[in-house]
Image 1 (tube, one colour):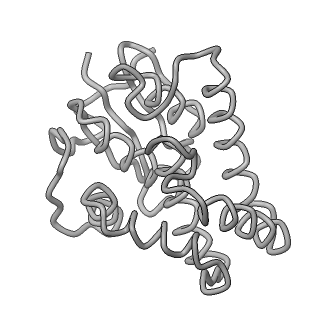
Image 2 (tube, one colour; image 1 turned 180 degrees about the vertical axis):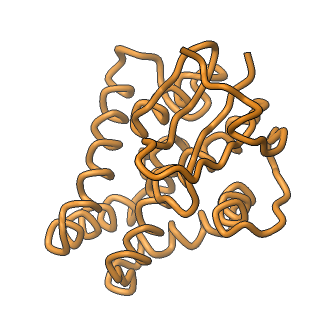
Amino acid sequence: METILYHRAPQGCAFGVIVALEWLCRPYRLVQVDLPGLPVPVLQAGGKLLRDCRGILRHIGQQRRYLLGYRAGTAEARRLDTLLDYLHEGFDGGPARMALSCAALDEVLASQEWIDGSKRTVADACLVAAVRWAQREAGLELAAYPALQRHVMELHADPAVFFADAIETQRPAVSSGRYLGSASVDALPMAA
């Protein structure tokens, strides 16, 4: 069964999922859903529906020999789960909490290339989405966090991030992954 992401544009969380799907390089489709009250994003994969953004990212991290994550049950997987929770809660917890999160992330990124340390993971996709949302919705300025700002700028130069931005802003988009195109929500019924 085809992998399909149901999303609403613009929406912060789905942005990170699109980035992660591009990095994963497995075939997928996007369906933009503009029905108020319908909870999105939803990922339909292998006959399952995943309705929670963190759950979707965790699922993506388990694909392709853990390209963007780690084997479930390992210390690395638990650390990545904690990091995803931290990113979601840190950027959605008000200005003071966001400032503390940015300072902590800035300190981490001052000494390592990726937010997780050893490799690019779904946490980097989550981070670029969270920062993008916080800049747009909460007026986040990254100038006080130079390492975080550098990392986010590097991520924005990534073709997957450029693609996700084009999708959200409804501009022509060129996939660097295996995007199969968009479909109508009517044409692709969700699995039960």
